Picture: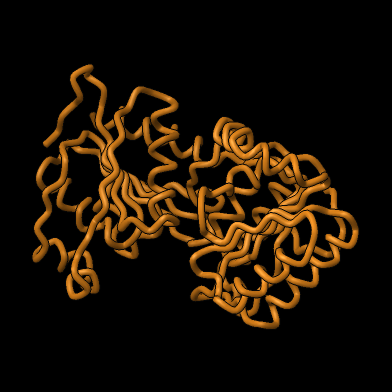
Length: 320
């Protein structure tokens, strides 16, 4: 199963269940590896029935059938990627397997585990980072900002991006939190800011409906509600300031790749280990809860994904 393409370039298989937030972590790491050294990428979505998907990874390994493409390296993210990585390693030990996130099992089953610092795990083949890998690069932001330049040009500066997540295991986007976010948005519009607002798949319907009403009534507001081309990267590039709901590791760390002022929008719930993430982002990038002020000190854009990609190649070279 270990193979290179016709040019002798190593092949990397990117494994996930296809959910955007999960796939982007594995794909972002793979793309950054390919930016450092020639690497052919292929994404593969794991699809099981509900009964098999609910099983522990080792039970999936016994029961599921895997017909995976040839590769030299496999990068997986999310629970459904674990069994395929174990299968690849069993079938061809020379394949380098990399798992993104806390696998919640013995990390020695993988050649490398890359996990958020706030997960609090450690070990000889575990590397930790602030937040999670992502696909955001300066080149991508510039390119997407230019692609959406016509829309952005209609919105006078200063521009503030609102990145709205939703309810998770630790946070709740309830009506109280949402009302606070809306109040911030209305205040900024009154001060002359243009707003770039995007919601996510986890955003409650009541909040999306409220944002739609707000966008239709206010001037200089661009709301992306999931319909049509996604201007997410253009919003990062076109904004002067970025406000992010504090439930999303991905959006917080992606925003910090810009080097721009980033602030948290509070949510209900008990953040637990996320407090470690907030502290790391405050120390590294000056991220704090939004208090009505704008600005903030400059910081070097956060690029933990590139640092992890270098470690992947170091492990690849050591094991091949």
